[in-house]
Image 1 (tube, one colour):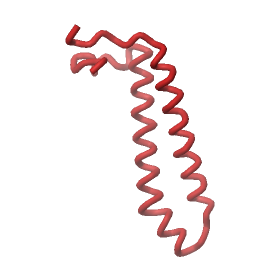
Image 2: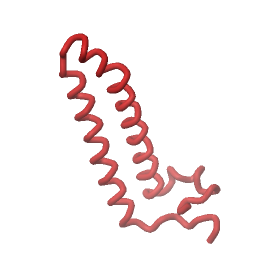
Image 3: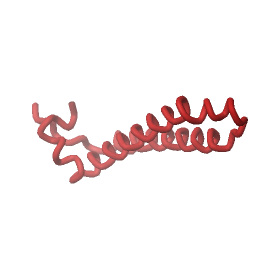
Amino acid sequence: MLVGIDGIARLGTSLYGQLLLAKLALFALMLALAAANRFVLTPRLTASGDLRALRISLSTEFAAGVLIVLLIGWAGTLEPPVSAMS
């Protein structure tokens, strides 16, 4: 709503848009890691008992979540782009 439909193509030109794109990329990474944890690493864990890969994946997912919170905090201090409705 803050960016507007017309502003999607210009997201990379402002710092606010770049932070939004980084947040979306980190969120996609978190979804991919969660899927890998559920469908690949957890079944492998029951078979082998090796926790190393799962720990690395969970640590990366946690770090991505912390980065998302930091990015949103930073974006909250910036002036959002003018919406198409303004």
